[in-house]
Amino acid sequence: MSQITELKFMREFIGVCAEGYRLGWHERNGGNLSYRMSDEDVASAKEFLQDGAPWQDIGTEVPGLKNEYFLVTGSGKHMRNVPLCPEENICIVKVDETGTKFQIQWGLVAGGRPTSELPTHLMNHEIKKQLTGGAYRVIYHAHPGNLIALTFVLPLEDKAFTHELWEMATENPVVFPQGIGIVPWMVPGGRDIAIATSKLMHKYDVAVWAHHGLFCAGPTFDDTFGLMNTVEKAAEICVKVKSMGGKCQTIPEKGFVQLAKDFNIELNS
Ligand code: 13P
Ligand code: ZN
Image (cartoon, rainbow, N blue to C red):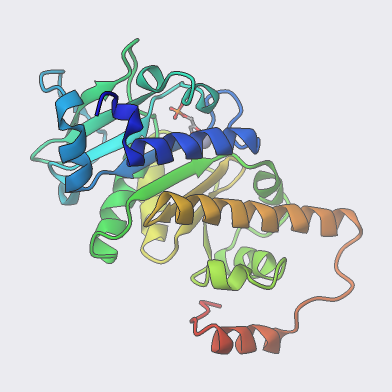
């Protein structure tokens, strides 16, 4: 392999950054993405990784992620620039033996540090890794406009918010059957919002940050990006419906029961 950016996980990661930007979810440096690398990913990237950079505080403790490697966007970097110059805008970090520090082993060649939301990303990864037996690998944060708009209008309550977005398209309950959790407005970028978000990740794959954006978790880039896309599409329909004066009719309550039965899913309603 002549370039690290030719590796599949790299191409997929860069693809999500590019597509999220194209859809308008990443103004300026808004949003961030992280991927927990598999042993095979680490082996395939090994020739490009370097030991020796200083160990820095994560700002929280993630003992369940000790010695794991993550591909992550840089703080203050623009998603728009990730495909143009990956080595300046994203990095690979290794978590230390204690789960309290990280070391940059590749990327951010013009300087910088991983996203300011690293505590939330890593605490979410830790809980999802444990809950899914290692299957979940992607955490994605975006600022999609319709979803943010709804946090000014819908009740900031998990059940009500979930039900409203389930109603906006028949297959939505199939895509996010566990529903959506809501973090009330908080100062971003630290341990407190990381704790609040990771608590919701015990129950949900989607966590709204009121008046800010959305976090999604999933096993693959496709699943996680698709989840973000589905929730934002639901929010867009909701904004349109409210702008047209509100619902005149909707999916009947027994329709959800039938859907759950036919699609063999458990709706957390
Ligand atoms: P970063 O540039 O540090 O990733 O922050 C962007 C953001 O969306 C904060 O919530
Ligand atoms: Zn943000």
